[in-house]
Amino acid sequence: MVLIIGSSQLRSALRMADVIKAVEEGFKEFSSKRAVMPPRCRIDVEGGAGAFLFMPAYLPRAGAIAVKEVSVHSGNRQARGLPTVRGVVILSDPKDGSPLAIIEGAALTAIRTGAAGAIAAKYLSNKDAEAVAIFGAGIQGRAQLEGLAEVRGIRKAWIVDPAEAAAKSLAEYAARTLGVDAEVCSDAEGACRRAGIIVTATTSRVPVIYGKWLDGGVHINGIGSHDPQSREIDSEAVLIAAREGKVVVDSYEACLSEAGDIIIPIKEGAIARADLHAEIGEVAAGAKRGRESELEVTLFKSVGISVQDAAAAMAAYQSVLRSGAGVEVELEDKVVI
Image (tube, rainbow, N blue to C red):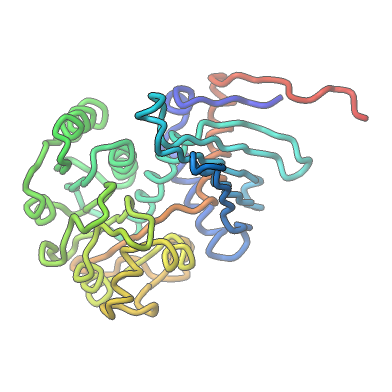
């Protein structure tokens, strides 16, 4: 039987705490070279209608093998009223090849990325950090706030987003669901200076935070940018983290090829490859150090890697199976030929 898990089943049955635990173990497997993560495969649709991306991963210790398929059709929203980006994750049993689950990909991606930000904050932010500045009030801003609330006693949030309605909606959600005193903020610099943790989860191609806004002790989660020409964090901020704290990434290889937040400062000569302190999996495993003083400025840059999808997919499968929230279907004939 294969479990079909939609976004509503994920939200009702899957706890962020369980995903944080699973993704942390996945990061450890990845950084210790036990995980298998082949290169991403891209297929462009004829006529430029769209593209499909396929991202597989295998986590031996977790007993999870999964592939995420993501489609990107830029004309969907205007022409058809459909999402631009859609995805599914297929989870299988590595022991016998049985398909275990087919999971809606957008919601799972948001949750696992929120978990990654939480793991980074767990090891890199000050333990008494209570205030957060969230840049970007979309699904990822919400997931980042949910993750942070699991690992730190977040009491105050400033939501920075040019779309005031979205910012207000996230602030109301944070107050109602997480018990966080959240308010919409138009003063980006002021939000940064008041926060112990800063999250960038925007679609901006240019910096939204600057080094001159950073005070000692702050931690930054750079989440939104994931191509070589775009960045949310300026070079001065990255340099400050490299010199006065630590720059940590989810994957050296992925960030050096996809993350403008890292690539651009290296090209400008602000930092060097050697300034990347660690992968988060190395820090979580104790192979590299996390925060060492209250005054360090730390930066975690994530572009997202498929081991997160495999780890989160297994956590989702187990949670939904226990809750009975998903729909089971029989894909195969019972007669073995």
